[in-house]
Amino acid sequence: MNSEQRFPQPQQPSELTPRQRAFFEYLCNRTCNGQSTPSLRQAAEDLGVSHTAVASMLQSLQEKGWIRREGRYSRSIELLGGGLLERAPTGRPVPIIGRVAAGLPLYAQQEWAGSVLVDAAVFRGEHLFALRVQGDSMIKAGILGGDLAICEPRQFAASGEIVVALVNSEEATVKRFYYLGDRIELRPENDAYPVMRYGLGEVLIQGKVIGIQRGPEQMAAL
Image (tube, rainbow, N blue to C red):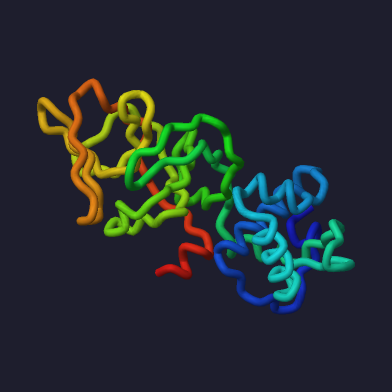
């Protein structure tokens, strides 16, 4: 059975934003895997967004002709646009691990905090993880407070790379890494913040930042 047989295609559905396409594919993946339609709470936890964001995306998909619901709050969803999935990116979930500071370092929390759906064609590495950025010390590198930094696990880095670094085994921060022989510098991308200097044994590289996922709140701030 092909995707057009599973999901009858509506006439000329409206174009989706990348965020809406990723959400639509999330719904399709659950259906194809025999899972039930997720509740707002479940979808919010799976995707690392708010309940309000899920409700808004459901409403947008319905208005654009990609899904059909019996009522605004119904969990019964008919997917109409599956035949057009080749136009949407293939999604993959990436776990969100605690939070990380882009400013003053924040205590490194190791709890799992949901997941975010990313484009699998762009983010191809294995065991990727995401961290929520706080602060504005990396704004010149295009990293804003509230962004999700998508990271590839690493225990090493080349000078100039943007990394997640664990300082003194307690504090995690996103900075540009420089190895200077007898010391390490973690440099911000904001002139309001100082360069952070450490001895070799004080900094452990946790991962390299390979991309950013940005929500509507951060986009409105640009």
